Image (cartoon, rainbow, N blue to C red; front, side):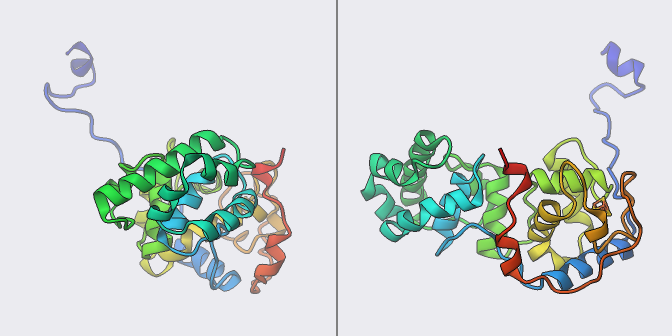
Amino acid sequence: MANLKSKNIAPGKTAAKRPAHSAYSPAEVAEIFRRFSVQRPEPKGELEHVNAFTLLVAVVLSAQATDLGVNKATRALFAAADTPQKMLALGEARVGDYIRTIGLWRNKAKNVIALSEALIRDHNGEVPDERDLLTRLPGVGRKTANVVLNMAFGQPTMAVDTHVFRIGNRIGLAPGKTPEAVEDILVRIIPREYMRHAHHWLILHGRYVCKARKPDCPACVIADICKAAEKTTSIPAPLVEIAALDESAVPDATQAP
Ligand code: SF4
């Protein structure tokens, strides 16, 4: 009570959170994503999958692992089991054999089996298309749910990973102390027509250009719009489409040993 009084907040009320703001105007945000869309008209998630279930499993397996490492393991796993029923029939030990090269594989094998059981028991073997239902599944957090909702169901969700979180804060696009805070701003400010791919554009921009240790500003197509204190140039790189082929050769800076 004393605390409430000292902050001039009426008893029974909580302090209203000040809404966080992007440092960019709606026109600037639209221009940023327009340029990303020119660079990569059809960005693909780099996790291989054949349906919503295998996407869900791949995302669960990708925690603290590289997409490349997950893909290597899941090619054989998904050839053997691409439905919850087949995964369950495979069993935890054999799932573990397939994913042994991925970090935390024992726990992840357990989760994949528990996940398959829950899908069969509660959802007729289908992956649900609601965040609340997804996050009740074993091993599925908000970020995983957002990736699945976006990629498998085309919903305008924003999965905030290390790259998205860094860019949101570094350039002031979506400043926030938590992934949820950054997510809230991004889903509010990104024009609807760009939401489907915005997550991938930000990840790829963070992975290859606005990198963690040192942003490569001369290679950045939004250098003239960017308001980051640490940017090294205001001259944007030429806006041309990037061949998807070039990107597969570049390692993920955040996952490097
Ligand atoms: S100009 Fe530099 S800091 Fe700004 S978004 Fe581009 S790479 Fe990042």
